[in-house]
Image (cartoon, rainbow, N blue to C red; front, top):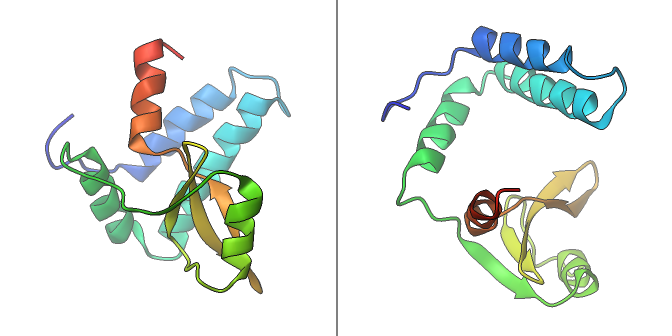
Length: 128
């Protein structure tokens, strides 16, 4: 991949569509490919492709590090912290070694699974 990758949205959507057709409609894979396509379409729709492209380039940078704000032993501890009002949208945290992201939903903050780079590297190394 080049150092300054271009994002050809239409090409990405074509590849996702082709991959979607290789799976049974309604299957886990089909659903997740549809979600990925909708995520990209949404980013384009709200006019944030430049922001996404900058994030994409940053994520490909070998020196890129995600700042983990807090570590928790259990999900219950992390949920309590989020509800305490100390969490902010887009904060990365770790629960029992796994990455999560604080996200704002209408009227509340919650946690979303967001693997950290070291988790993804471990999966690649183990062949998962």
